[in-house]
Image (cartoon, rainbow over all chains, first blue to last red; front, side):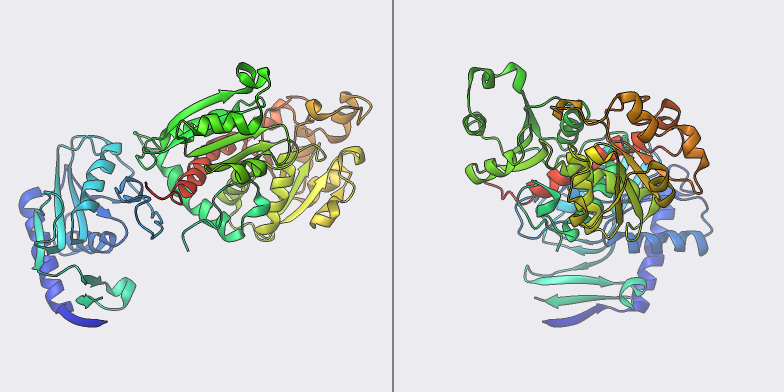
Length: 179
Length: 310
């Protein structure tokens, strides 16, 4: 397996600050906005962005949650890989709120399609946006595009984009892995 | 890894401790789902499930049906009383007829022990045992252990006593298997006439004194006297049973520690337990019922994930 470093930890920090500022530009004081990290790996990015907004930009009381989409996937029983669900923690309704989905890699778009259905169990948002760290540009299976992008990567099917986080993997880095 | 080791749920005897942990982890997520504003997930929308109940049931039947509907499955119900079983149709014929209508999973409660096992040898669908005679009731044991785990954490080393009609109780047997697999210590308590002779061989303690059993335990699971399975007299009178083995508030309050009180239902208020115990804050009877839906959703979700898509 070949591994190539795409983005190092310093550049990731810069990207996270830029994304935070883009969010502030559109959502101002986050009064009516809700950030939702998608399980399993979007939650680390979501945690980082929330901390950044709170500590570096003094935005207080951000409504925040985790959404697990396992039961809404469209490949249930079609994969040989078994699926394990993670925690969904949304302690509020999203009725009439602006929702921002946060995920690390946008690939085929099927996770986001599942998230769009799953979030309806918590109310009817007034709008839904997507924030993603990596956009695998030409790999979409569905008409889904991000509103906030960290960086775009062109990768083929046999390649995997892996986002590493210090909290979980010991370092902040984005790698391109040849399978 | 995240897959059951079996294609059916016929009894706790046939599943592993790892299977039970997987069911619990999945049930944790489903418990969150059934507390959302919209309590449905689309996972089983291409699956049809038949509920075959050849014996009476309130809780179990409703619980399974609700679990199936929350998973978006198509559900058909069959009750023996109003069916061709009265005209003499055999079990296998009944089920094969239902399967010809392309049913993927069968949830069955039957008065004969081993009915589910017989069926699994003859039909292709996935089978969930909702109670077979006095043999096993696996989903009840799973939800009982799940409920204890919710309150007391890891079951390893916890002390559970099963009180009452152990001889005729499928809930008792399944609970014994499950609790032992999860590392708990188990005792059974009841009149000697209602304790199976060699029950000790399953690794459980035997106690005929209720007070001693309650002072020992962390959790007391009170079982109903199964009159419908009795063909002779096992104790002089109900009054005598109540005096010796009924749990009331006075006894509960006099114990050295606060124990949890459980009951699989239906409760005979004033027999196994009094109303004030059933409604006390130590009773987790209603949480058992709520957890029952989550556990059954988990079981059917995990069994369905082994049925490959056409």
